[in-house]
Length: 297
Image (cartoon, rainbow, N blue to C red; front, top):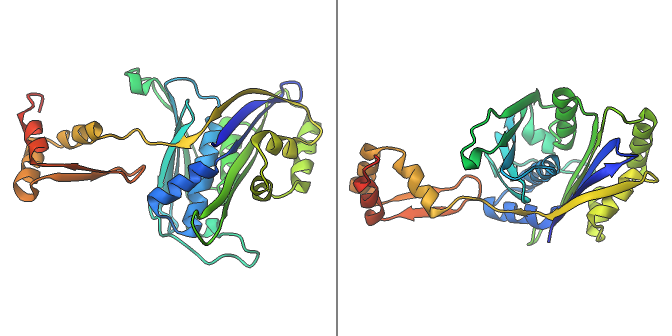
């Protein structure tokens, strides 16, 4: 089972998060049938969103959206407090040949665009508070650097972000996935930042460590070196969507009686596919008639 931990380091002057997300990314890739490069891009965004939302409270929601001018067109991920994340990629077939060093050209399919983070609280229970929305231009398109760039420019938090997805040619295509996020608080000693940068520079590959069985705690130790840390919380994480047949009915009903009547007369039913998870919901003639009989329309 995938796991995320969060805590503090260097006398509570640094926030730290680490996660193994292999099964989470594997499920997303399976549901959206993504190309290799798109799989890596989507996996990095899902993992980064979980890390960024590691301290979400009940009824909070964090959404990361990449509006891309590249062939990927866009990526969206949404995380909630209990460790569930869902997401999709607008063009799941976006792909490019691997680089000479064997890495995937995520930068090539993402290209230019905007990196947008939305933080909401209480929306699902009817507390319509004004959401916080921050956005910055995409820095590199490699995803990890874009999370760090967003944190620095929009939230003024110097950060180090490591995100990795390792693929193999046969099923399950995702060998392993995970990430680390380190955030320097205003009280942090600049020397600590230098130490962490040096440790990360000389650390083993993130995906190599995960492939060898590293757990989140070991990923933190690998990136912090001799700096002590304390874990404040942990939770299981997974890919899970909140769509349902009832929500599909509500969405189709919201189109109005004229549109629903046309579906009944022309198609004898309706089909809705959830963009976040690719689940397909089919409404038959009786379902549409029940919508038309509802007084609220």
